[in-house]
Length: 215
Image (tube, rainbow, N blue to C red; front, top):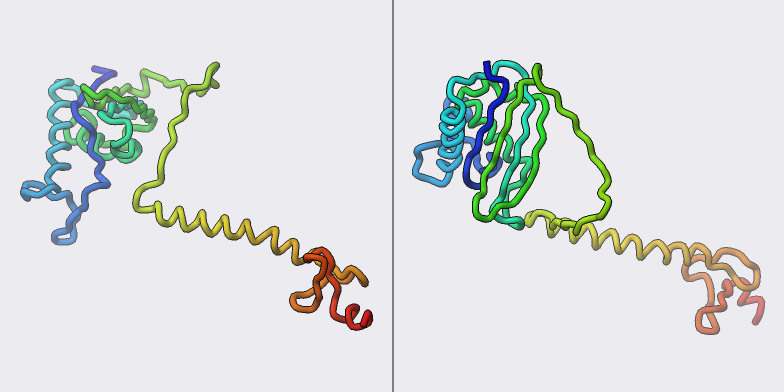
């Protein structure tokens, strides 16, 4: 009995989240053979199934598995969210009969790479009863250039609004503190809005009671 399998599927993976399910007689399913863009997902899932079966003839896993998924995108800037593509990939693997249920994958590592000439994904499956996986994160001796990410296009407006509100609130804090600390130069009582007179360019503040006594 095989304890290991590997599947390599060319092309950029497709995210299932980009397609809408349709319902019929109370059952939801992914449309196919409609002649529309929605067929793309069904075709991709079938392609995964055919390749997985042809690359691993006669293998059927029925126990828990460790999976290592390496995704090679064509572009570093434009590609699906890596955490969203696993559903479409494992739906295709399940459809192939290589596994009986994608719930068998109990440990999963996903790695993201870039290959302009040969975008693809490579999936390795290991029987958990035979293999173990050790996972270690170590600090680099020399840092590498960092990659910055932009918020999704449909949330940029909200992010800017929140940032603007945050900046506005932060700007109000010193002003509120300043108002709270204003005291009469004569009696040293805290001043309230509209109940004082300012002089010397605002450096001298006198409450109206003290100001009236000075007259």
